[in-house]
Image (cartoon, rainbow, N blue to C red; front, side):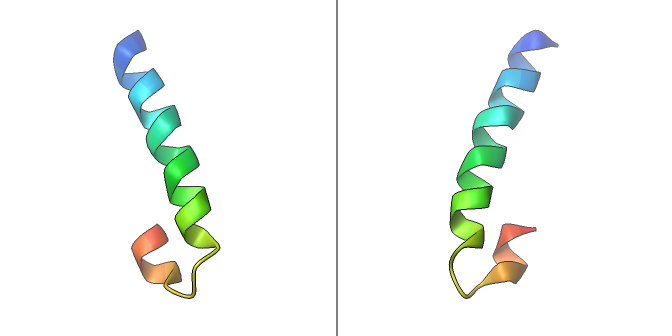
Length: 28
């Protein structure tokens, strides 16, 4: 499951970056 955690971490970082955009709904 370590790989999944790493993938989730990368995805979360990308999501946070997208959060800066006006579309907060897509972020979550």
